[in-house]
Image (cartoon, rainbow, N blue to C red; front, side, top):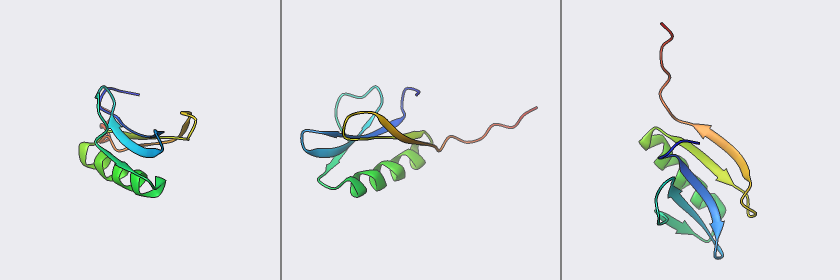
Length: 72
C-alpha cells in the first residue's frame, strides 16, 4: 500500500474513507455500500488504489486505479 491510497474502514459505528497518510476521514456513512462507492469514485479520480477493510480492520479487497506503465 502506497502513500495516498484510499482506505474504506469501519470506526465508531460508521464506515469511513481516508487517504493513507491523512489524519481525518474524507467522508463517513452509516452504510457500507455508500462508503465503498464514494471511496471507489475518489480512488479512481485520484488514480490510486482503493483498499476496503472489514469491520475488524482486515483487508477485504483492493482495486488499483493507477495508470498502467508501458514496458519498454
